[in-house]
Length: 463
Image (cartoon, rainbow, N blue to C red; front, side):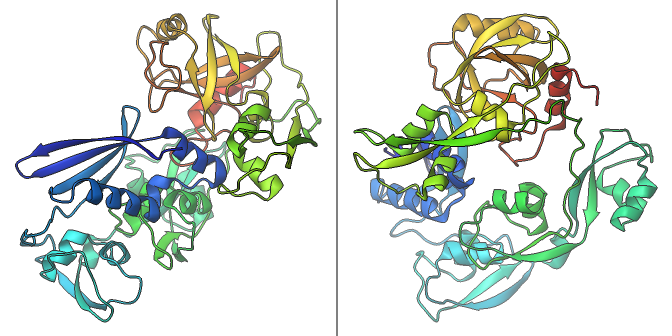
């Protein structure tokens, strides 16, 4: 598939902005495969930079905006320098200190700036560079912010349980009550069951390895991308191999869950698919209703694996037992990772019934790895959604029942349209979020307690 669909150029006296539209399936492939986002990948950024320089060799480019559909998903700052330009004068670090760095093989301005938490422009200004070229052995002055500017607090996320108090939490995590209050902007020591608190924690060093992204590291240490960026004074989401990051030294408290109503567990069997013309891992994952990453892992494939006609591919088949519900109006509470995503796979249609009003509309799951990104089937379905949410689309989560293939599943959804869309004639610009038991948010792969509360309501659980 083509990575870049088209580009646009918007110019002002001080420079130009390039708007690049990329194929949304590129990011979806990467999410399904290993959670890596190409928008956070050095090779992807360099590819975009190369493309822009080839397209506009004699134009001063200050900024590149990456778009999927109508949404800006990333921006790349350019130095704004072309042949004959004078390097920018001054530096945002004029009042600070410098460290010396000797260029080694493989270095680029981008890599050096990222390593020291500064910018390409500031390195160029400090060293009177008029190009992006470096040579091995070159001595650079690197502007450094004072240590007083660097944040010192890492935190982990904790959900308040019955019997908790700030005093108990302070002893459990070996921190002071005042530090918890300060981090959470609290004026009293009152906390409530279900409340989400940031708990200050000690930090440890983590060395970036090949394939790491901020999302992967944040998930590994049960924190957020924003916390890691703040803790390390990062101004972008880019990482380089062997970069040392400060990360929280303790892990997150898991969210308590209600007991299940059956001891039956899902099982997996396997069938064999013989490859025909036009088959690829993505089309097979859609055809058989499984994540592409699972298909790749089961067969030892990678994203670059080419299938040959007649080749046999192993297909996992997930058998999800029907769970008893607490009444006719309730839905099965199916775990997203082992059950729900297989009952409601990509391209599957379903009927949604709002738990409170009883009103229904039809949807299709069009994408999504951590929860079901879905779209209303028709403009009439979109209009019903808007009416249920009080006449305006909203990020407010509501308990719903998802009916698919005769099964009723407890779920939670918001109605706000956003990001990519696949159904273009339904009067709904984008997709909405549909969560199931233990599903997570795309932005940080964390469980959303508000969605989980609504799912429990739809399943008839009170906790």
